[in-house]
Length: 166
Image (tube, rainbow, N blue to C red):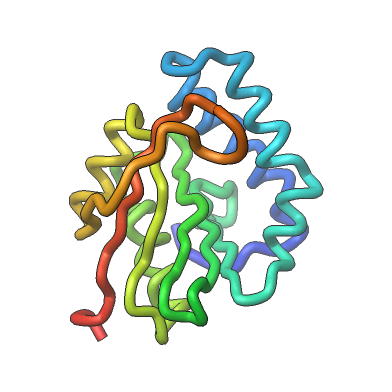
């Protein structure tokens, strides 16, 4: 796998990866119906295209020229001092092979002025929480309701300092 910037031609494969990964990760926790609702809201083709076109953002894919095996989307925040990592997902059958680490490294490289990278991760997604903690993130907060309204999706807010790395 190599990591590259996503293009509009990748959007169908990205959505397929997101749907597969979300269902594999969250169906047992929140139920397939609820996950379908989340996917329809957060990962509609229009929303994915808008994410691709956002200024001060990076949308990356891990690609082996046959398939997209991972995706990451991050955006500069707080005047460039912080990177908000909105998503980092790897296909279920490819997890544990270093693809997530490659995507994370490339996200960090894409924002050389940033002093920290921050994200929210579902508290019950123990595998993802362990991945981020193993990659130098620490918990700085928690929310009981991710997104708008009373979602009931508890998330940890994690951050990793980048200042010492630069």
